Image (cartoon, rainbow, N blue to C red; front, side, top):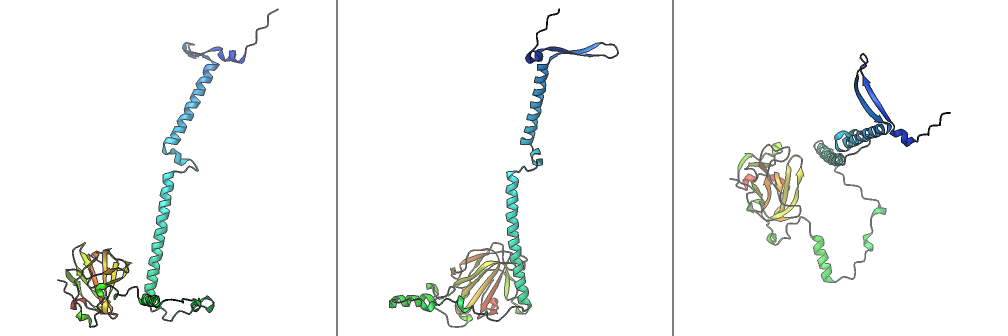
Length: 294
C-alpha cells in the first residue's frame, strides 16, 4: 500500500519550479527555455501593472492630457475666463453708454427733446422743511449761512485773483494764447464750426486763456478729451481733441496755466491740433479777433 503524499501548502505551490521550453515545430529543436515559478510570474505581472499605472498617472498629471479629462479645471484657464468676462462686461457698459449718447444726439437733431418743465412730485413725497427749527442762531451765524448759500459751485468771483470783476465788453479782456501754431480751419458758424483749429506739434501744452474755473473736463466721443473754463463776464473757453487733461471740474486756473496737452482724440479729429472755442453771453465768437495765435 502506497504511502499518502503530504499535502503541499499554497506557499509551496507558488515556489514550484516549471520550465517553459520553446521548440521548432518541424525539427523539435529547442530554441529557448525559461525556468519559472508561479511566484516569479506573479511578481512579473504585478510589476508591469504598477509600472503601467505609474506611467499613466504621470502622463495625466505632468502633460496637457489632463485637460481632456471631463471635469478637470485649470486655475490659469479659470482666471483667463474671469478676465474675459470682466472685459466683456466693461465693453458692454461702454457700448450702452455710446448707444445712449447717440440716442440723445438723434433726439436733439430731430428736435425730440421735451421743453416742458418736469411735473412736481406728489405732495406726500415733498419734505416739509418749514417745520425745521433753526433758531436760536446768532447774527454772525445767520450772515455766514446767507453767504455760503449764495455761493455757486462754478462762481468765478470767489477767488482772490478774480475779485475784480470786469464790467466792460469782451474786447476789454487780454486773452492769453492757448497755443502757438497755424490756423488750419477758420471760425464758421454756418457749418457748425464754432471755433478755430490750430495745428501744433504733438504734445504741445495747452494753456488757459483767462482766469477762471473748470466747468467741464471729460471724454466725449466726437471731440475726445475736452475741457471748458468759465471766466468773468459770462465768457467760456473750450479746448477740444486733447490727449491729456490736467484739470478737473471745479479747479481754479490762472491765465497761462497748463490745462492739457495737444492731441488727436475724438472721431472729428484727423491729426494733432487744438480746436479752440470762445463763447460770450452764450454766443460763439471768433477767437481770431481777440487772440494772436502766431
